[in-house]
Amino acid sequence: MNFSPKMNAAVLTAISSVFLVLAYNFRFWNEFSEAIGGLGWGNAPLHIAAFVILTLTFNALLIVAALPRIMKPFLILLFLATSLASHYMSAYGIVIDEAMMQAVFETDVREATELLNWNVALAVLLLGLLPSLVVWRIRLDFPPFRRGLLLHTGIAAVSLVLAAGLLLLFFKSIAPAFREHRELRFLLAPTNYIYATRGYLKRKYGRPSVIASIGSDAAKGPLWQERPRKTAMVIVLGETARAMNFSLNGYVRDTNPELAKQAGLINFANVSACGTATAVSVPCVFSSLGRKNYSETAAKSQQGLLDVLDHAGFSVLWRDNNTGCKGTCDRVKFEDWSQPVAGDPLCTPEECFDEHLLSGLPALMRSSKGDMVIVLHQKGSHGPAYWKRYPHRFGRWNPVCTTTSLEKCSRDSIIAAYDNTILYTDHFLSETIDLLRMSESEDGIDTALIYFSDHGESLGEMNLYLHGAPYVIAPEEQRRVPFMVWLSDGFRSRFQIDTKCLSARTQQAFSHDNVFHSALGMLNVSTAVYNPALDIFQACRRPGRAEAMREDR
Image (cartoon, rainbow, N blue to C red; front, side):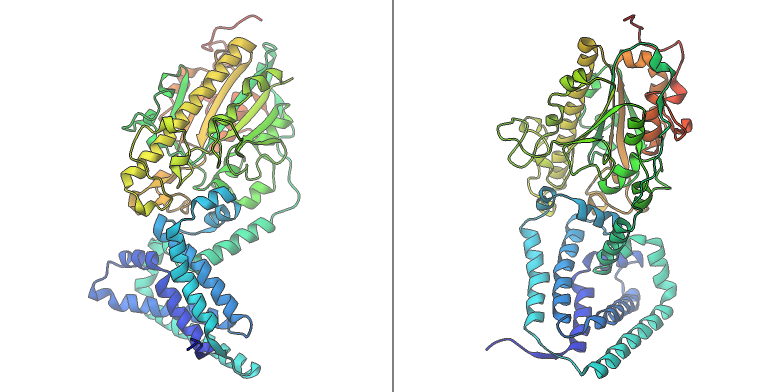
């Protein structure tokens, strides 16, 4: 016998509302229970009231789609999408806001496939495909159009009135829970990803088409007149590296054995990121806006650091081993180094290790006709496939988690894999410094390096994993990032930078807000958009007292 029951559309709407509230919101209900003081009998009325309020609200919204040829496809799409959202919130402890949806839309296929596994398939099967199949098999009964319009409008109105009444009745208890625990609104599916997607698309397609020029007055300052040597500065943009797992910052594991031996390296231990996702942090850190004034629309409507350096006469290059520059390099030279190269020992069939970015770098600087700024965008510690981010010889800590289903791994194995990525980043940065030092000694090029990560990562603290939490509630693990500087002798001498002074500032609080102005300051670029108060190097410029011996050339 074929399963094909007949059901009134309004009844299916009500059942679907209950199903959405209960089946897809385990994280929400867990957090809500904690926010109101637990599951005790005294809180039972509040739990029931919250359930009824949400069900009535969902019912009022879904009844709008209770139309022939629309209702079934709409519910099927909703169940499939919400099953995915629910799984990732439960499996990785993430919350879904605009930044998270931006990361979803702007990720590449290879990163996306790392998040696909059998647990995802099971979640989609049980909570997506099965309820969709039921909906598909139901024979829906719709009233005549006019009567249906009045009926559905009445159902929506009554649902909203009842929900509002209950909310007013329990407002004194419910309001503080949502006010003190703002993450709750990012956990309620499907409204979280629907509103987040709407906000992202509105920002993306509503931005100005005209990009304002900034720093067009940029020019090299007087320190460039001291000697006619080429200069090359490398900015290494890290990925998902959190400061607390760097032994240079006091971590118990020796994750920085090579950098610890690099003479002249200055490590800043207290630096905050502009955001908790690449799609936010990268355009923010390369803009002049600062975190408090940053918005995607504002950043997309004006030029950034690389444009200002281009105005000043530098040859600017972005080499990428990740998912692009998020608009920050749109007007400078871009090279994609993320595609696997057959036979290259620095690549696997799926991706390339970060050392691939260094291929031909000394020759590039040597052949350049002028001064260069080169950005190297790492794959870094991007998760959850941490074990893929480093060559086998850097697997110092074991056992490691070798699945993207982190719930199948012990927390120790996840951290071990992550720490191995930091160990490899240590090697990559040290090798970059060695190349820059060689370029000075062999090619007479004054060189410098700045390294910082875009954001940090949660590794199970408070049962959170990965990154992308809304900044206002993001844990320190996602906000604190490594930041370090290395300057060659010639660079220090030319730009009169006192590294002892810099070393005395390494425990001060800095942030991504300092990067734009510090890069201009250390390169002695004069422009009206430069703010010396945000330049880390400004207080440590000592005319006539630079550490390095001047060379007459």
